[in-house]
Image 1 (tube, rainbow, N blue to C red):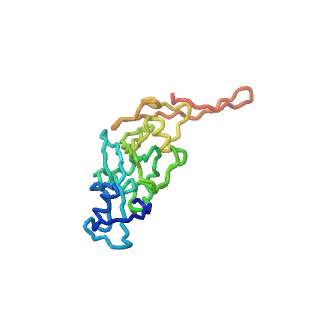
Image 2 (cartoon, one colour):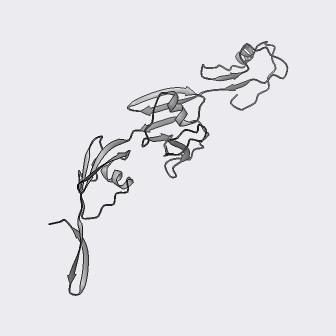
Image 3 (cartoon, rainbow, N blue to C red):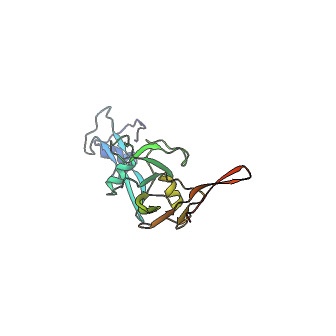
Length: 212
């Protein structure tokens, strides 16, 4: 049962009866070999794999399932959950690395390699208990008059710009402010300061200011 071997003596004639005698109750999602109606013979090996319970939180819903799968992406697939390229998958409190192949499916998007420092240690082969999907949203950034779109899972504007590699200087102005929560379809405007040098008593002070 689940890789643990037990030796039993029995007078039963079928696999189903042996399991019943042993108090092993199978659910529809569990796996059994050989089939329940197989006749018992001396030395017969009976293998049982029990499905584990998984909770999936996605799009404001809580989905419950029992599965033999341990690959998060495969579990999501079986529930009809489709992932975008920038969506984040969190397994038992640890974020998966996006854009790398999942070890035992060959599919792209989330890897069984875990982001360091993102939660308690977890063996990728262990079945997950909780899978969370955080959807990325599209925002428009207008950087000194040049618009472009960003897809982000970050909670605030400042974090979204940092993730995208957009460098801000102390004198730059961002509207809405950097601490504003990101929402789908929002527009963020960046007004750039310009570098200036001021000579005072033989010393040069470099700073930034807005265009006058």
